[in-house]
Image 1 (cartoon, rainbow, N blue to C red):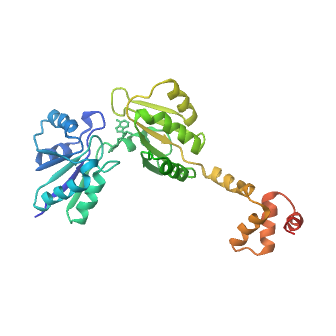
Image 2: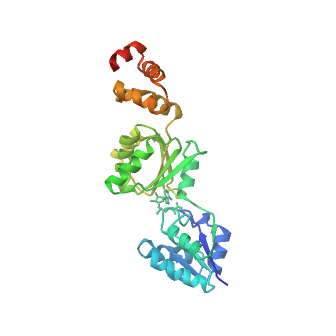
Amino acid sequence: MAGTLYLCATPIGNLEDITYRVLKTLKEVDLIAAEDTRNSIKLLNHFEISTPMTSYHEYNKYDKAETLIGKLAEGQNVALITDAGTPAISDPGEVLVKMAHEAGITVTSLPGPCACITALTLSGLPTRRFAFEAFLPAEKKERKVILDSLVDETRTIILYEAPHHLLKTLKDLLAALGDRKATVCRELTKKHETVFLTSLSKAVEYYTENEPKGECVIVIEGKSFSQIESDSQEEWKKLSVDEHMKHYLEQGMDKKEAMKAVARDRGVSKQDIYKQLL
Ligand code: SAM
């Protein structure tokens, strides 16, 4: 019978956040696949776990997934752990999970710490609807595509960032999204945890003066529906009268209705529009 792949969430700072179930599983499985074995050995030693460990990381994620699936198919139980937090959230775990499902292997997840959810709950921003963006792409064009796609995002936005990129990312966010409420969560669950309820512009000011330290999560308020509505009412300002007419005609209005709508948007009479179209 094939084994099971266990996704085991590990602490993002405070070792006491490990769950009983994760400890039990890490002791009982045949093999632990870890993102960085040098890092994870500290965790395993702390909890006196001596299960064999192998590496599973960004640079061997496809080949090693095949090897691990082979072991699972032979009946071994494998636990996946990453440097910190929930495997498959912004790390190579997602590849192994997909390939394991495709191979008909049972995959189960043992919930626990996750930086994204921890930051969201602390942010003081709406938590009911959120968009997790992980890290913004480093490549310029891709980064712009993602930033542009976030402009009209109405859900709370969550981003991961390393300290040495924090200031640039905050500046890019400010330029793309305009000033918004933002919460920068640093060193979550650790001794120097800080939750900085601020705005994008104030965060840029602050981190220009103070060097960012420690891992962080940026949580940003989504665009309000009233802002979206007022933006769309202003859209016509970019259009000529002809283009404005075309916009309504394409929505299925007849010429008379379109002229009325254009006149209303522009705060002029229908006759004025008629004259301009002539
Ligand atoms: N799988 C992890 C999880 O469940 O959160 C995330 C892995 S991702 C490669 C690492 C990023 O998570 C860091 O760059 C940082 O943005 C965020 N992170 C991890 N631990 C954190 C902590 N203690 N405080 C703040 N952010 C943290």
